[in-house]
Length: 210
Ligand SMILES: Cc1cc2nc3c(=O)[nH]c(=O)nc-3n(C[C@H](O)[C@H](O)[C@H](O)COP(=O)(O)O)c2cc1C
Image 1 (tube, rainbow, N blue to C red):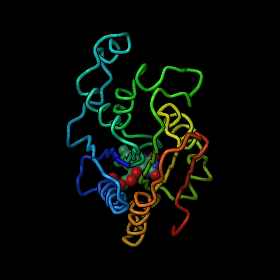
Image 2: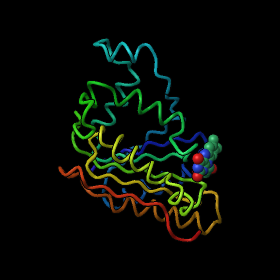
Image 3: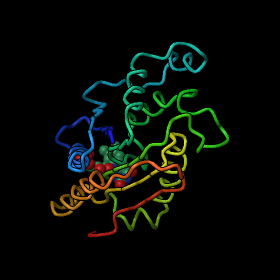
């Protein structure tokens, strides 16, 4: 498969950047080709603008959106790596999703998130988070993210294998971080092909260690 990793972190020495490297390394070891979209390093503009609105209304698609869509078009699997910010996506990732997965290209069925215009793909979210896994489960935050990202966002994307791995304890001990990086490698190594069955979803907070 061809595997696209979308990284959102301005610091190349961040834990998130290390997670992306480990994931790609695992995917490469399993025989997949890999491509990195380092949104901050590349200077992607996440601001939804009048040009995006006009594109929805039969205007020309902005050039930067077209080149991101070309990346998606050649990918069989897509992995998002970003730190959990305020129980959601950081602004860069959010803007990339808003602008690139556009009306008429990604979806047009407002009443059915699973009727994407895109072909089936495998989707993975690797999300470093400072919080503990038990805190996220008990508060309902993990279930909320699962509903929004796995059912909602990945549904509209047309992803048929859907995995959310919240990497809890990302600011913890070296041992903890090493275990999370090993998990990221395994996620890349164990990637499976997209299926036609959109009910194939996996969600996990990290329940070891903390
Ligand atoms: C603006 C901001 C918001 C954050 N919000 C959350 C949050 O809602 N939940 C959480 O568990 N951690 C939160 N964190 C902690 C980050 O997830 C954590 O610092 C990050 O995963 C560490 O990885 P990094 O080195 O790649 O940044 C937040 C951090 C920042 C800077």
